[in-house]
Length: 439
Image (cartoon, rainbow, N blue to C red; front, side, top):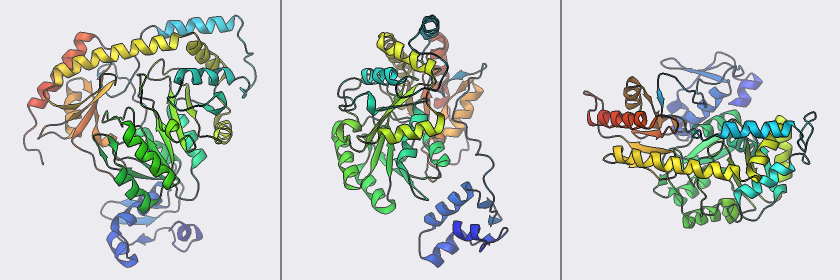
């Protein structure tokens, strides 16, 4: 279709056959045709209008869909949508570090960062991750990015190739996964989950059917479902990665605690990436993220990073290095974990009668709604009460379905009484679903 439109064989204004008609003619499933039409629309090759059909436009995409990734705070609402780090004095400490660096730091703030000037920060990251979590590695295998999302993009750009690359991920995924796939013109295929995360049998089925160059997954702290993938399941998936020549990107950004479960980078270091940041445990303002690359791929990933943004600014590199090497980052992380545990305890006490999934060190919980509620309807009802939550459809893949559920982030910076009161208002809403809802 792409070749025909670009060559002029299919002229601008041409109406394409309905999905089912073309599927019948080609002897393939309607779902395959629908995905092709959707990808063509995202590339600006066609335009689909409800009731009229799909027409060739041949134009480039001039703007992305209105699907913002960043959750902006709204003064009149309690924000239970975004996962934010608690305020425990990071601002004051970072300002002190900046002043100390200004009085005579190790680097001049004049030229571009290099592999020499960012070495201290990369070595600090290796110290921060610790021994054995991501396997044996050194500073040379660490590639730095502007937060975890940027580091994931960097890893994907290193891995993906071909006209229509395939990214495999969980059937419900953090919205950043959709944004990354859209920007890279990649096809996103979801894999069914159970209580232990991705199902290996469903993953193998997807790989046989669709192929797949990379699995992008959050096994330690899955957003939105809170699912944790145990070691045995991870070993099964690592074996599939070897069998199907699949690379794995493990996005660990929502994990605040010190996990004892080895990352995929430890289980299959030749084909797994470990990605995280300081955003959820220390400070999101720094935009300091990192990827531990598979063996032999760090130089290629570093070249991708340099081609994209030249590297993290030297002042941020130095601040992050001081935070980690001084032990202050670990102090902040530990305090953040304590605050999360306290908020989770309060939330479970208030909402425990409902179908919630939670873990004591995760800053959000997953609420499966009782009969009569839909995710979007419940989110609107909460908003009327001055509370913003995230419905499940915001985590669904383009071709996927969303359960009747919401993710509730446990706002760590709101007043404790206000926080508990908001949860109680939610519980009251759950007890009184709207009438005349189409189930």
